[in-house]
Length: 228
Image 1 (tube, helix red, strand yellow):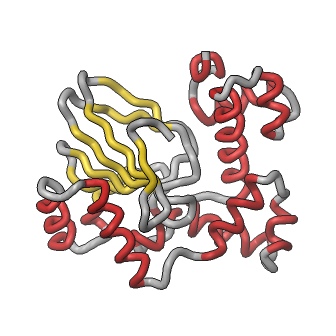
Image 2 (tube, one colour; image 1 turned 180 degrees about the horizontal axis):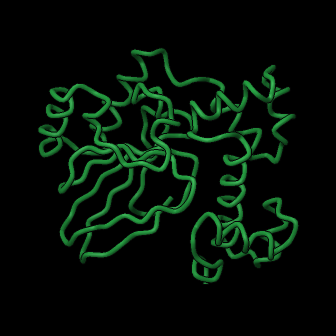
Image 3 (cartoon, one colour; image 1 turned 60 degrees about the horizontal axis):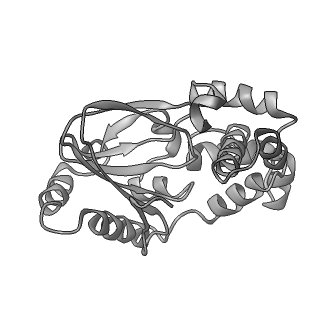
């Protein structure tokens, strides 16, 4: 976790904060998560699950606070399936009552923004009985390298039902989620100092070129661009 990040105590997510010193574009890599984001420029926005890297345009002086939910948790907070948000940035008042969103935005100046987002999201989760429990089990199984068939069997689902549940929870099917989680594992190993070939093997790739192809496809840049 970076110095700009902290654990969200109520939702189990990550609160992150940024102040933009100069206008730029930021490359956001897919991670299987959704974020609830407040910006001093745009207000409250949902960042849906990305299938490939997204480019965010940031303006000088902009203040941004986000709450990144654990994979599969966001849909329970927003009240819409993740597939309706895939590869999109949607204003929160498109899915919540405008008056509710306006009230939250008015409070962002007085309260700690990250804590407020966590409290608001926790209240929504409590109202619906918490996140879908299958989300954590699916994520854990795929992150551990289980096949789609093994993951479905472990949950007592058919592969078809697993695919449907994954689209609702994560915004895409289990094969795409597994591919994204594998890339995140490899990048974490590389940033911890592992050689590229070792990181590729330990993350579950056939070889380093396989990792390089996935980086190009999912991040839109070369492996060296990301880690060198």
